[in-house]
Image (cartoon, rainbow, N blue to C red; front, side, top):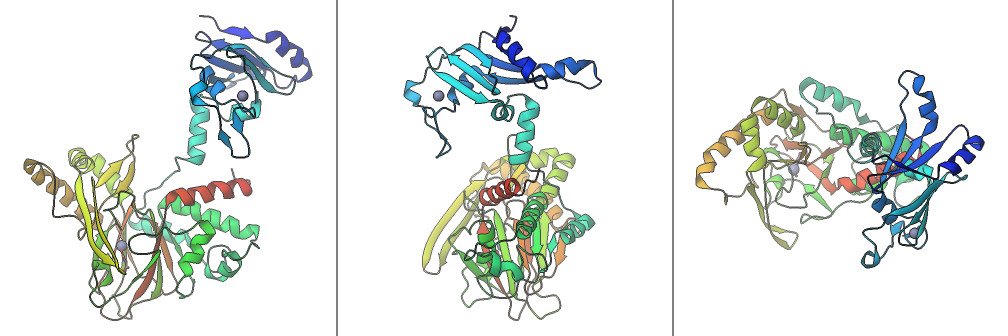
Length: 437
Ligand code: OGA
Ligand code: ZN
Ligand code: ZN
């Protein structure tokens, strides 16, 4: 069916006034879509590469997203249309572009809506607009870090204390207690968050050795997430420790708290006191985004086993008088529907001895797991380094595995967690405030 042009006369009349931008309105597919076409580009279509810009909107979505005060509360930034009184078969009866660059629609339910072209342009259903929105706001670019490149990328994301914003010198001016933040410090914070999102790991140096520092740092972004181990936790060799991390022994590569469905995502580890032994208490990190991607390409069948077989993870115990019995079942590698790794579960101490899968599937799971274990420990994939007192190591606990070598003197880290939701939110706000594209 030919598109029906609505309001063309009006468009023509404003076309002469706003000759640089001429949008026409039409409907398609029995009024199920309203389409805006930029006639300016059409006129330019003789130019190489010129493309007619078409903005496509399903009619029902437009009616549902009417921005008038009866349908949308601007103060709460929320839709208020009563779902039980919505006409699901609603259709546009008239649509035109006004002189004020608004799309005006008269609906079959008697309602009238005005939409600004600026607002519409950002929400068009064409794939280019949608992908640009998602890349900027949601599907952030991640770069796998590996081997030699690992140390390169890792170095690059170090922030020295002369940067104002997230390092110790600036905590006093940037902490929760004060509002006197310089734009420079926000820029540093934004760059740091962007590094953390991209590489999954970032280090802050020279942060001093005061307990509570990560809480102040976290307040620059949002706030820490309390878990069964407290709002922050102290990693040190303790008498009668109820967790493998709180001993002086080596800590095998692992993620923290895989036995929680709601696993903490960003891990902060602040080195308060480092072992004085030459090789005691060194840190390991491996990016499982890299290991997983490699294994998917080289051993797809084994990767598929790790991606599909649910493993039982558990932590049964007590911390500071709080008793818990946490269990969660999930594969070692979890993907989103685009086939990207969204979470890795990996912990030798916290892998449950209940394994609720068919007995005949166990051998092939161990075979796949052993390959993954080898690759995670492969020195080409793993970074081995020493935290210095005052360092705060921050990384994505759903993506990188971490561990440490044994020590037999004193060593103290303070740890805490935050969720990506909060870090992403801060990044979006900072980008807007600082006009960063
Ligand atoms: C932990 C942990 C690392 C370290 O407490 O979960 O991984 O270097 N600690 O002690
Ligand atoms: Zn309305
Ligand atoms: Zn850990």
